[in-house]
Length: 146
Image 1 (tube, rainbow, N blue to C red):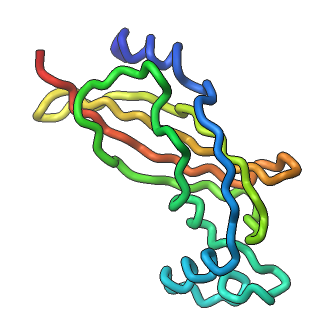
Image 2: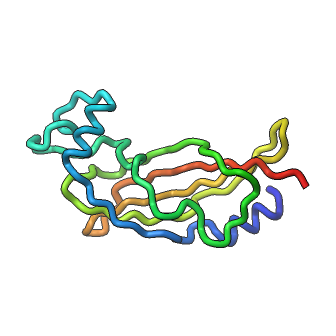
């Protein structure tokens, strides 16, 4: 791994840099489920005894910052994908706390040069502090030529 990237990993990985509250509204999660083509009542019907947000719902939530203060820009940042990890059901009608940290920083080299990938992880917790889900957002920056 390049020395500059290892230094960034040492400085920034795992350090929480943003926290935000999210009110999970039943009508919003049910409409999200409907638009995704979901057919199970537990995602569509607020009266269902197991009513919950669809597993991918947290991917539409975002914190206030995607990168920590002081993180260098290698070039123009572009979306490089999303990932969701569900640990427990998210119950509509609840308020979640989202905490963001950098989960990974790595490089790939292509025909146009080095690309720096940054994975920002937003972890979601309920009011009891139970970790419910993770939503990873990847950003790719093609390094500017010197």
